[in-house]
Length: 256
Image (cartoon, rainbow, N blue to C red; front, side):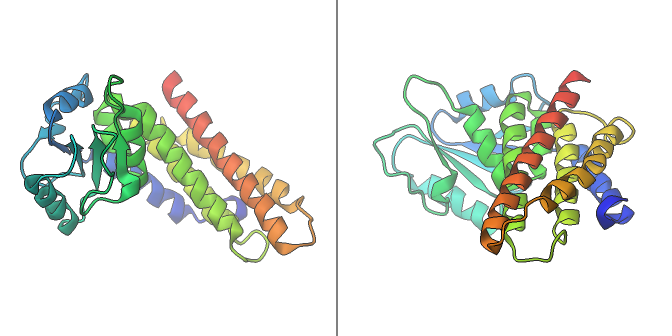
């Protein structure tokens, strides 16, 4: 394996991706116009993936639609989800209302401008940021989420690798972790496209591993004297390389 990457780490990534592909995905939608949003999300998807209202138990995430301030039942649903460690995504229909929702992070509230329809891609992006690799299963079951989740997973992995490159580690120490992050990204994008994890996805992982020495060589060419300046450039390299992995993996999965 290149860069000291262990076979166990790669096999674990395959195992986790296969488990995610086989796990039933569930999304709970509640609030005003929830029925319309649930219908749009479920279009062309696996039956029973989107549940309209009900208990939080068994849901991967909750999408809470609001037409103004959160009412008592909506606050209670968000509180229950918070206790169960289930992420809540808010969709605010009234742009004049303060986006703060009890038990919901402000960054997880998606505005829905009037007359523009539900922002499915934006909702998918927040799901990808909050759920990580788990969002790939939702995208596989709900094609309407696919593009937004794929972009969100790619950005999430790119940000993670860029932050890792900023850490004051010895030269090349962070590269194995970066490469495994890219392997997991490639596998997650395959899951999101509904591909079977196995021989069909092996070329994606092989391409990431084959590119790892090139990333190391490029990183070593950064010879700036100031440590912080060097790390900033390396972070940019890591970010761009991971975006490229996501783009290439998405193209291969779509082509297949």
